[in-house]
Amino acid sequence: MTEEAEKEGAFKKKYEFLEDLPGIGPATAQKLRELGFHTVESLAMATARELEPAGISEKKAFAIIEAARSSISVSFVRADELLRMRQSVLRLTTSSKALDGVLDGGLETQTITEFYGEYGSGKSQLCHQLCVNVQLSPERGGLNGAALYVDTENTFRTERIVQMARHLGLDPEQVVKNIIYAEAYTSDHQMFLLDNADEVIKGNNVKLIIIDSLTSHFRSEYIGREMLAPRQQKLNKHMHKLIRLARAFNAAAVVTNQVMAKPDVFFGDAVHPIGGHIVGHTSHTRVYLRRAAHGPVRIARLVSSPYLPEGEEIFKITENGIEDVSEEEKTKSRGR
Image (cartoon, rainbow, N blue to C red; front, side):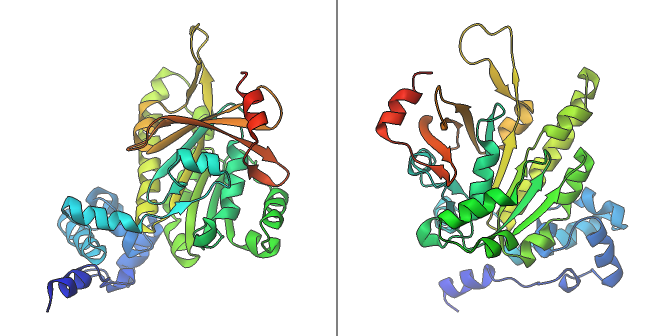
């Protein structure tokens, strides 16, 4: 067998269902599904402690996780191999060439992109646009996939999706069918939805996972300094679950975030995202959105990225969705 064939065999999946894994029978598989582990990919990203409630010993849990990881080749690799693996990362257009340019071609799969800003800055509008764009062909900047939308603020509107789909020449009825929606009523419900999303993602070819907004329920339920630690721990677990799903299914993960004002700041921007360092460290790409001085124009500033420089660009929100602006509109909007 040649070296190339060996490598290809190493990346080939061995197990399709939980019951295929050694040491997992029907009863254990059912318990794991009740815990939110519906696929081999989700088990590969789990920890031994997370399997304890299923009555699995630590030693057996390590063996199960190891088998699942070998199935999807989770191991050490050389940087040159990582470079080749990075070629599987796809990009999703925002419908604005200017904003895509700041993001080096669009939103990356296998990472979390965070959009934060004040109310009315365009966060949810961007999410709606991405739900439509993900269904486009790769030639048009899409991923030929479906979208999973977790709504915590009741801002999702199918009417807006229909408008955007028509503008792009897509069948609105089909576009709406390819968006799997769930409204989260509490922070625990929000976490539960994501913990049980892997089967939905796999069964519907989901290539975009959206949480709009990430911190809304956590902010309202965990009040006071004494609740800060448990809130941050839950947020940390929640976001790590999100990145596991994005990496396991090569999907783009998008979260929107609320902001808070700091009245004691007299110079510079007094607006800061909620979630502290936990959200800041876990979000790979952070984009700050704000209104321009006039009209439907929005300013997007790339705040942090693992490899992209900080940058700022302008787009506008119209009846058609997210669009680029003219040079004249750019000049006016930068007046703020």
